[in-house]
Structures are given as C-alpha cells and as structure tokens.
Image 1 (cartoon, rainbow, N blue to C red):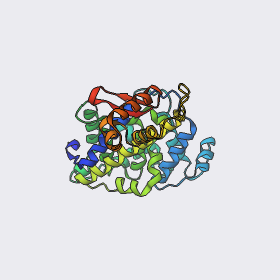
Image 2 (image 1 turned 90 degrees about the vertical axis):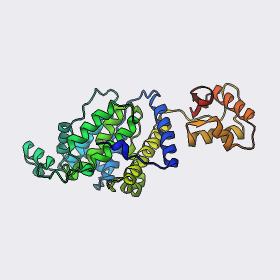
Image 3 (image 1 turned 120 degrees about the horizontal axis):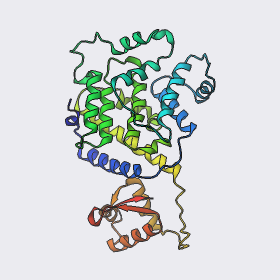
Image 4 (image 1 turned 90 degrees about the horizontal axis):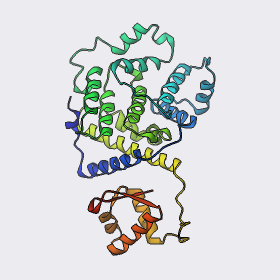
Length: 331
C-alpha cells in the first residue's frame, strides 16, 4: 500500500496544507497544563453522535453518563463511547498500541445492545466478515490488518508528516467493509488516539470532531466520498488538516489569556498598522516577513520590521527560524 503516492494536491492546496501543518507543529510544542474537562468530552461525544447520524442530545448524554444502570436506547453506546473518549482525553496517557485486535474490541464495545452481538466470538466473526472475497479487498477496501501494518510502518518513516500519515490511515480505514456500521465512530476514536500519539496535547481542550460538526455538509462530502482516486484522497486530506488547524486554534483561545490591546509594560496601545499586522499574522500564521511586506505594500519594509520587533518585545507575537527563514506567529 503506497498511499503517500496518491497525494496530488494543487499548488494552492499544497501550500495551505504545508502552512497549516507548520502551525500545528508550533501549537503542539506549546504547554497545555490543564487536564481535559468533562465539557470537552461530552461535546466531543455529542459531535460524533451528530456526525454519525445518532443525534443524541447533550442532556441525554449527561443523564446516561451519571446513571450507570440506564436502560435508555443509546445507553450502551454512550457509556462505551464516553469511556473511550475520556481514556484518551486525560492528562497522562500511557503508550497505546493500535492493532487489529484493539480496533475490533473498540468496535464490539460500541454495539448498541447485547442482542446485536450475543457473544464475544460472534462479535469478532461479524466484525471480521471473513467471507469478504479477496477481490473486494482491493486498495479501496484493503484488509484491516494491511491498513494497520501500513500505519505502523509509516509511523516510523520521515517521508510524510505524522498528521498526514494519520489522515491517510483514517481515509483508508473508512473503506473497511469488515466493521460495518461502527466503522465511522471507531474512526473518530482512533483519530483521538493517534493525534495524542503525535503530541497534539491541544486535544485536551478542543477536538476535531467539534469543528467537523459545525459544517456537516463539508464533513459528509469529505468523509462519505470514499472513492479510490487521487481527487478523493486530496479532498479528504485538505479537509482533515483544516479541521485540525481550526481545532488547535480554538484550543489556544481557551487556554491563552485574551490578547491585550494595551501594553502594561509601555502603557501604549498598538497603532492601527500594528493591529493590521497582528490580524494578518493571526489569520495566516505562520507568516514570513515577505508576505507581510506584500500585504502592507504601502508601508516600507524598515517600518514593518520595527513594528514586528516592538510587537515581539511586547509579547504580541513570537518567531521561529532565523534570517530569511523566520516565520511569525500570534502569541
């Protein structure tokens, strides 16, 4: 399986993906000291229920969670999903192995009633769907073991960005015919596990599913179109990276203090030009100096350079790299 060869992004999409991955790398190096709270876990479960067509209300979710013996129709699903999500979104998570057996266990635990799968052996038999022909397990529907093996190999490779590896794995996982109806929910849980393994601690405050649910049309367009061609893979990866980018930005809003427009150190507000620069950096980070100069084409490079230096000293922005490789981020 050479999924990496199937990435054929346009120049614009490629540049956007590269920029957003750079921002995600920057955010992942930030310190997120606070543990995940119940609101994030419940909001994530609610978002997943909407995305996968269950539409379980937040109040219902909270009621089921607090009642271990609840006989509500979705109680088994809610308890299992909540347990899986909360086990990932806790402050300290030990290394978790992603293998075929673990994926099948997650899928089995999400079955809504005991009658669906009366025994563990039957669960595995149904989930594996062993009668699937070899012809059906083409690249668009590769065997689960092959997909997991690809993930393990690529996780040790440096050819692709780790978040692209996760995105490609999830895309390929969604072609599985062996997991049937639980496949999409399992995909969201695996996404959380794999993102934590990539060091995305911002998940503790905001998860991608909460972004995806805001535009379910875009979600279904990207996720449901599991056609094995370059266009579908590219469409999914652009959507995947953008969802991570927005979720990470939301996490930073939650954890970082509100950006002051008045510097306590100098008792001087940022001027209009500097505010313009700050907004441009915020919406396009990471940003190179040349891009700022182009955006503020009426201002001289020296003036912009002085503004950037002052804004950095005041703590409004931060930088990475040196000389022409320097990029700017909003603090």
